[in-house]
Every structure is written in C-alpha cells, then in structure tokens.
Amino acid sequence: MADEKNLIDDEATEMASPEEFKEVFDEVTPPQPEKEFDTNTLANIENFPEEEATPLPRTGLNVASIKDRAAAGLLDILALGYLYWGCLLGYNTLVWGELLRPFPKEGHAIIFHTIFTLLAFLYFFVSEGAFFTSLGKFFAGLSVRNREGGQASLLSIAIRNFLRPIDYLFLFFPTWVLLEKSSNKQRLGDFVAGTVVMKHYARAPQRVRVSGNSASATVRLLTGFIDLLFSAAFIGGLLLFIDYKRPIFSFLILLLTPLFYLLWHLMWEGLFQTTIGLWIFGCKLATEEGTPIGFTQAILRAFFKLFDTNPIGWLTLFLSNKNQRPSDLAAGTVVVYEKRSLHVLIGFAVALIAIIGVWLAGMQNPRSFITPFFKIDFLSKVFTINVGGGRSIPSTQGLFIKRFNFLESDRTAPRKNAEFKPGETILFSFDMTGFAVRNNEAWVQEDLIVRYPDNQIGFKQETIVDFHQLLKDPEIPLEIMNTLALPPNAQPGHYTLVLVLHDRFSDRHLTEQRTFLVTPP
Image 1 (cartoon, rainbow, N blue to C red):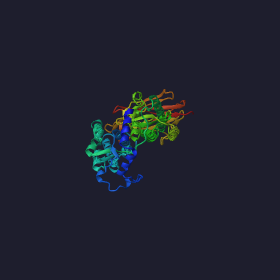
Image 2: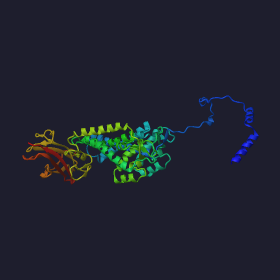
Image 3: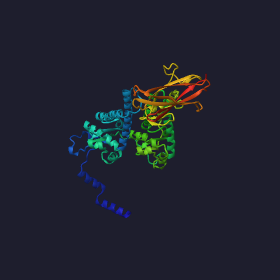
Image 4: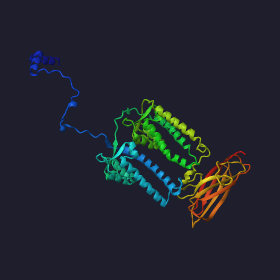
C-alpha cells in the first residue's frame, strides 16, 4: 500500500506542479471579490414562482381520538345527570310544592321524562350550535365541524343530536365499532349529519423519560393508599354536614359528592400532574409517550379509579409491564420518577386546609355520622322505604312518613329539641302518604315500640292506631298523632321510637325509627 501511494504521488508530480496548476486555474476562473452572506436575502426575494410554492399542512385541527371523545362524553353524561335531578326537584316543586318526594309515576312520569328529554336535546343543540362544543368537549379541547373542518350548519347539529339516543342505546354496535373503524372516528349521528369532532392541539409539551423510569408496583401501592386516605378525608368531611333535620341540604350534599370527588382528582392530576402520595415518593404522572397528561387523561383516570382499589386492580398493577393500574390503562398514563416540584407544596397546603376546615365545620353538626343521632331517613322520600331495619319497598309503591315532629304540650307547635324529663308526656305526629285507597276509603294500622338506651324493649303495643274510614280527599296525607308517657323512673339516655305502619289494602309495610333523649331530672 505504501508503494502504491508513492507511485500515485510521483505521477501527480510529473503531470504538473502546484504552482503550474494554480496559474492555469487563475487563467480560466478570474478571482472573485469576497462577499459576506446576506441573512436577509430570503426575505428580499420577490415574485417567487407560484408553481414552486408548497402549501402548508393544516396543523390546527385533527380528528379527535376515541379516548378524547370518551372523556368528553363522560363529563357530558355527568352534566346530564345533574340536569335530570335539577328537573326532578323543579318538577316536584311546581307540581306538588315540595322538593323531596317519590319519583313521578304513571302520567306524571311520562310528562317529566318528556320535559327532560327536550332539555337534554337543547343542552347539546344550543351549545354545539352556538359554540360548536359542549361542556365536556370544551374541557377536552374538542369541537364539532363539518368534514372539511369548517363550521357545521345548524341542520347538521340538529341531526347529529337527534340521533344521539340511538348511539347511546346501541353503544357497542354500531356506535363503538364505527368510532373505532371509521377514518374520521364518526358515530352514526356524525355519518348522517356529515360532522366530525376535531381536536385542537397546543404547542408540543416537554417530554420526560418513560422507558425504564416507571415507578415500581410497591411504590404505587403505597402512594395509592396515601391518596385514598386524603380523598376519603375530604369527602368524609363533606358528609359530616348531612343532617336529617335539614333533608334538602343533606340531599344536595349527597348529590354533589361525585362532583366534589371529580374536582379533587382533576385539581391534583390535571393541574399539578401528580398527587399527594406520588409527590411524597418523588413521582409524577405522564402519558405513555412521556408528555404531560391533559383533561382527557385526568378525567378518564378519575372515572376508572373505582376499578383500582380491589384485588383485580392490585393484580393488574403488579402484572403490567409499566406497573399500571386499570385507570392508567384506560387513560394511557404511567407514573415515572421525577424531581419534586416545590409549587406542589402550595396545593398540598390548600388541600390540607380544606380538609381541616370541612372537618371542623362538619363536627359542629350534632347529628353527623360520627354521632349516635345520625340518620338518613330523608332518602326514603326519594329512593327506598327503609332506614330503620324494616322491609325495603320501592319508593314508587310504598308508604312514606313526612314531617315527623315532637310537639309541645299544647300540641300547637313542634318542639325545638327532642329532650324530655322522666315522667313527662311525649307527643309526636307525622303525615303518611303512599297508602292504597279503595272506594275512597283507607285502612292503615300502626304498631309502636320503644327501645331503652340498653336496646331492650321497654314498651310495645300493636295496633296503637287503626284508621279505617272514608276520606274527604284521598290526595291529602293522613296525619297521625301519638301520646307516650315516660315512667317517673326512666333512666337518662337515648331512647328509640320504632314505628311500624301497615297498609291493609295493599299489604305493604313500613318500619322507621326516631330517637329522643331523656335527661336527668
């Protein structure tokens, strides 16, 4: 190889020396003056040939994925659920003058559900027709467009929402199959209306390393337990406000509990990209691609957390490749190790103050679930007759007790508290509805039992009331009044009244309980 290289060099020397080669080159190409590169050259180009211009791709809109549409749909269904209850409470108030009462039945049920169906249609039609989005789609960054990405017409919006019940009814086939297999992820309503749900993309987020960086199953199990404690503490503090003497307020607390639960998880996972437990162990949430999670992932995780805290969820955590729980698999998220962010301390402080605050305020309720006076008998007015250990009867077919009150000795006004002295006479009354009527006649009986503080039966009388007569107005509730004399040697403590009602015409029964306190003389 060395000889070959020398030979080539020798031949080049024989052909021309470097000086001779330079002289020949200068004669052919005259020297050009040096010129600096003008960075503004491209900006000064004018009359650029039209045929050489390349149109830019449309990057602002893209077809929404199934996960995006599922997340938006879940939030819209939650909104429809609250719309349903709002309509029900409003209908009860307008028709019967009371918020809490049994579900409408027969003709009223048809009228009520017709009204709700119309309002549900308007919920989607107005929001999508005016703003091209609904509440769920807005938070998921989605909008309804035509196939070209332009504004959908009101007729198209009306058609897609008119067919929405069919898509909900046949959720798996054809709805889910169409969403999965069609190129534009369209359901039946979209196909007929010529609409497409688009996703609005923001700038590319910063990525984190996912491969080989996922948190271990043991760490995730511990963080999940910590998060469960904090969320249960927050929800438990809210439930402290339930008071059977404030049935409407207590019912609203129960009704809004799922919303509070959802907002708790959305705040942590959507805003801080972590949870209290994950932050303590130096972890954070990310998508499987390593990008920060968005609304779609946060809401899917919140809804599917119900499947996490059970043996199958724990088994999935240990068997999955990236130590994912069912909520992670549904949302496409992973938990990775990441340096702790100090701004999460602000959220932790706010959450801790909120938990302590609701507990301090809730413990002021003398009839909360941590006291022996706790009852949720007001639910029997809406759902199921029970709340006393008696037989459960569907609310559309059973007896109801309303406006139970202990009375003053003159029987003219409710007693302010249920506290009595030994030897005192107890007066109480209540209204009863839901009884059967035959030929304008009702037949109702009442049994009364009194349990002492040690749970022993101190008084029991069957058929203390036997109402069997014609009614002036069958729609008016029956008012029943009882008198009970305490013995002079009654021991202080909490006593329980057990009311057992029998509707002899329908053979239905109701058992409910009320408590009162006997104080020392």
